[in-house]
Figure 1 (cartoon, rainbow, N blue to C red):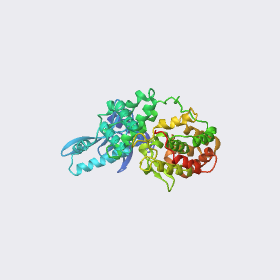
Figure 2 (tube, rainbow, N blue to C red; figure 1 turned 30 degrees about the horizontal axis):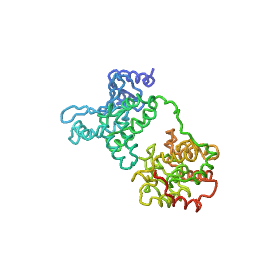
Figure 3 (cartoon, rainbow, N blue to C red; figure 1 turned 90 degrees about the vertical axis):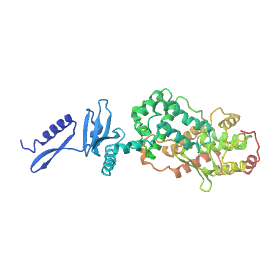
Figure 4 (cartoon, rainbow, N blue to C red; figure 1 turned 180 degrees about the vertical axis):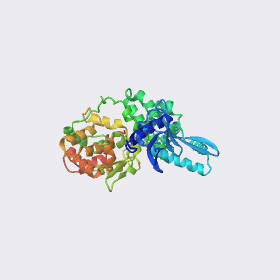
Length: 442
């Protein structure tokens, strides 16, 4: 058998011997006519698949340590000021091979410039906040844009109750996928809705830490989906008015008496198909009347992503009426009782009850979605975008960068035409009735 023919067997034997020594060996190279085994650079696939405990060298001092527990960590071995130093570069589950090489290059540069990489790393870590501090800071930052005291308190209290006792004292840079699972697993099935909120808020805090330079690599919250059990379907649904009843309900709403702002808020909620909290928390700084656009900031959205809402002609007119009713308020739909606070959600619900309906205000979103599916040819993704629903398919979400705004504007115009059954302007009689009304405070 020729030397060339025996090469694959030689490589296999070299790799086996190298692994036993804790060194990954790979292809041979020719030097002076002789094939000499050389340590090969690790690959992302090798890093992912290797299970055998040991030390695997990538070159220039960078090694991958695999422990009996299955944990894998990157370490850089350097000599600084005459001393051998082992510099930790992070967990292989969160720091990719490419990122580990970049970090190793930065630490080697520290050595060349006379700095002790371990001391530099320790100094840097002293500025990294704990998860508790990072969460409290993020909460304070977001509080500036929140007017709903209940949501403001709930946001941080869920983390204080479920996350702080487990990872509160851990540096935000050190929070791993295992830590996130440790927080979520006990409540994932038992308290499904709370668990989803905690997961979302964990992601926000860790993403903010990454942007601030306190973390590298992927957000561990984004990587745990496969490890979580599928939650049971929500059994409780918001009762919804059948969409066929919507035109009649709108006529009754127009003919009703009561607080003008409450009626405007209820109709605005129906026409925009937005959540009650998003409507009641609307501020004039979010409204652009010339372009008929309402931009809801991320901190006020359930999915914590900024959302643009196309406003129909009727919505624009209702906003002008609301401005006339409360010209000095920063809120579009302010409470008459509590200065600086929005209308209560109960005010709209009680008005709906006076119209003889037992359903919920939130259920109007379902009415809209059912109508769009049954009575229009708009694509499902346009309808879901109108409801500000998060794309479940991550691949689809990655490729669909736009928000389908132009198509959503046409959809909302069609919805308005359906439920009003006529032209898009309030008649003069109704305009006078609303602007001249001084009903019971909400």
